[in-house]
Image (cartoon, rainbow, N blue to C red):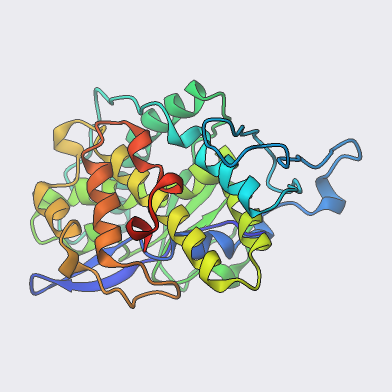
Length: 319
């Protein structure tokens, strides 16, 4: 089973370098299975595997049960798909955030300025997800963000060799997002007015890893991937459905902020331009049209998470 963190794409857009935080999210979530406690260390003898075999693949009839990251799920691929199609992040809405005060941040930031804008962004995003998770009866512990300069990897409960220079290390064991200096759309902005909202956008995408972890949706997703071992085509589609759902929800959360804290319209236009995206980037490519479809859905969702339910979408929308 697999859980984890988020990677990036480096793309030339409009003559400039735009750092995007979306591609390989699902892939990186798989890379930190070691974040989950081992059975020998943490599983109670009274813990029983959750059995979704009686669940229908009809989303209207499937049921979702919160589980621990180390729980073993049973059931075949159809059962697990049905649960994911009816998971708590596929219905209802995200709350509006009435106040989000992001500090003025220059184009070239000091470590302290970067930490300040990410801390403020985390507070604003926590206002969304604390309410959203509570409304769904799910646990939520807001992650913290720690800025560092690679290769000076900070002390952490996650292994030092799992840190990389070009994407944040989301360590679910201690609920910390380790943010390397120079990462993100915010780092590539040339207009200081757009820097704070760009960093909030970066963090909104990365924040989906703790959301998936704490909601336990990633456990069902990881187990589904395990059942598809040997069927690369289906496994790739499942990866895309999960990744695109997370991207859509990240976009939705970024737009629940007050207008001044949202990613700038110009940035959203770039993200929703198919020419922005290289379909061959990443270990599991996503068609640019699919990526744009789900980002646009999230940006225009007005907080309705149902529009991000990739698990019931036709195959051509998750290509």
